[in-house]
Image 1 (cartoon, rainbow, N blue to C red):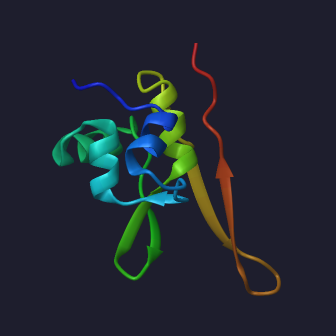
Image 2: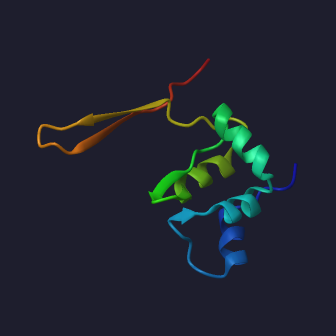
Image 3: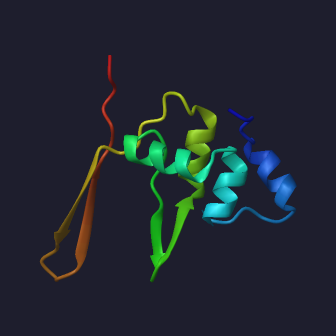
Length: 102
């Protein structure tokens, strides 16, 4: 597997401020993973899943990628997310964090 770039390496390479979300091409370049390896890791829970940016656009949160970059071997995403409707009719998302495994 190729070397993973650090946060400062990413900023230096791109030569501009860090975006809030990274698109597929950026994620593949930063992680040095192939597209199929990336999707395999997402399916197994070993890599953060992309979020919807509207329409068909997807992207990865910078914070989630940085968390994975810091420790790719022991990365564990949130365990589950439940969408509910509030009394005012708005959607509320409840997310449970992963519990530590011994």
